[in-house]
Structure formats: structure tokens, C-alpha cells
Image 1 (spheres, rainbow, N blue to C red):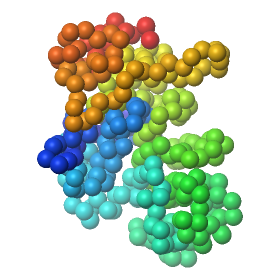
Image 2: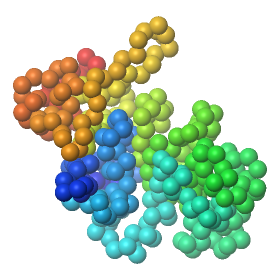
Image 3: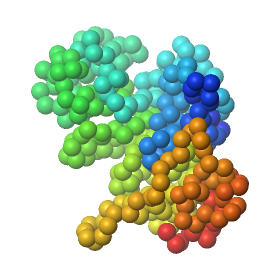
Length: 326
């Protein structure tokens, strides 16, 4: 599959009171044309920072993209000037943010905010753009879209604001959508409608980078999965391979944490401990203090992300042994 986006050795740090906090550490991955790739991991693993870095949305300062490339259709986004980057944001790559409260302007009505996305890229005049805005509010399941188009963001619930953000991300039919927890604050019925809409966009050759904690959503939506922990990718695999035979202890733990309807009385599994602070990563494998399989080498060396076959990688010294035993 030809790659639409190729991320290579991305490293992002935040300068905090004389210390450098490494949020993303040497991350590499690709997204193919018409492909949905899932990015999973606990909060604090660097998923959102990695995604925002693609469009250079990490605030500088305190953030800095120290190294790496983000090649989109042959152009390195990290090396473009701001004018060239603005022509890509929204039109070719769009992002659905986790928190619509901070992404929507509080002083502009919903309709004009959506319409501006079209007019600023020369896709429609003001009247046509407002008509398209109302249409897309309807598409994302907002009742009375004409009335909502005349409302301010603060007049909407969190779930309604999230749907407005999704409409704004999809309205230009971009080639890549970065969806960071796109159904936060939405009930399951509306969430299902949003995922149906993303699938519809895919039928028009839109690729998706889907960031989520919900492994059920990963199974339903994605072709490939990347597991991120403490700023690094620790496993990459097709959806089917990952669920059938995870190759990293962290992935095994995430899958074991999923509730199972077949055994309702069983106690939910949880991975002991918590994600380490980027200011204090443990030596060796960053998962070693939470890993039931850790041994001396894990505490001294950081395992590389190595190939386990076609399109399959894991950063674990015993990955081959774990395959099939997840």
C-alpha cells in the first residue's frame, strides 16, 4: 500500500523550568491511502502530542520538535513555511480535537465558524458555505441545524460542540483525518453515527489516524494498530494479528483489561502501576517496572522496535516467545 503519510524519527520535547520533558521519543509510522490506523495507549503516553506534531500544532514554547520528518504526499510538513502549511491544514489534513471547548471560538456563531473553513480555502462563497455548514450539522446528527448554526458555542452541550468539531474536520473532504478521541462526551448512539460518517468518508478515499482508548472501536474501525507507551511505539500490527496474538506485554495487558460479557462476574484486570513521568523514565525498557515478564536485561537496555514479519513490529526482548501466548 502506497503511503499517504510517513513519520520518521519524530521527537518532541517540552522545556519545563530548566528541564526537558520528552513527550515523543523517536516515533516512526506510516499511514497508507484509504487506510484507518489506530493509535492506542494510556493517557500520558504521547499519542496526542505525536498527532498534533504532524500539523505543527504543538505550542512553541514550551514545546519543540527536536527531530524527525512528516512526509505527506512527498512534502515534509515539518519543513514547510507557515503559508504552505496553512494551505494543507483543514483542506488536506484535518484534526478532530479532544476538547471542543478550547478549539471553537467563543465569540463566533457556529454557522460562520463552519462556513469560514470553506471560504478561507476558496471552496465556496459566503452563502454557499453557510448552506454547507447547515448540511454538515445535520450529517453529524445535530437536531435543528438551522437554529444551531445561529448559536454560540457556549449555548451548546459538550457533546453538541464535539459534533460541530467533527463537522468542521470533515466538511472539506480531506485526504487525512486525525481523530483524537472523536466521540468524547457522546452517547453510544451518536458515537456509532460518527463512526459511520468516518467510514463514509473512507469510501471517498479519506485516510484516518484514530486515537482512542477503546479497543472495541479499534476492532470495528481500523486496519492496523500502533500501541504507544511512554513516548514510544512498542508494537505495530494488523488489527487481526494484534488481537489474536499480541507480542508486547503492554499490549497483552491492554487486551486483558477489556470487559468480557461472557464472564460478567470476573474481576476486571488492570495493569499495575502507572505510566512513568517523561521527566523520570526508568532505565532500560520503560515498561519494565510494570511488566510481569521483566528480567535483568529489560532494566538495563531499551529494546529496539524490531520486525517480526511483514508489517509487524514489537519492542520487547521476548516478543517471539510471547507470540501466540497473549
